[in-house]
Length: 139
Image (cartoon, rainbow, N blue to C red):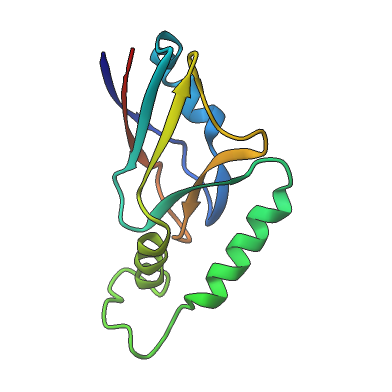
């Protein structure tokens, strides 16, 4: 069986945000699959998705600190700057981290490690809510 649904996440400030529960609350169809695979695709070019630590919030702060230093704003070689100094760095960060995840599903639940969660990586200083396409294949 296949399920596909587009959902919208609430707006988040710039940073790395744990959104596992927000995604699951909008996708009850997951509980109907005993074995499968969930693809999550973010429909934006200035944010990204990743899986990482779900317990200690300082990990998310450290991610933001690292990426802000690794891909700084206002570099003189950026040519794409019409939408502000955070725009081109946001695109670069999104390309580095990626816009989709594939997660195994077992007995109606995401088969993640005990300390893993899904992050929305918001790279813009001001962003509206982000849209995700959830595609679930399984039986």
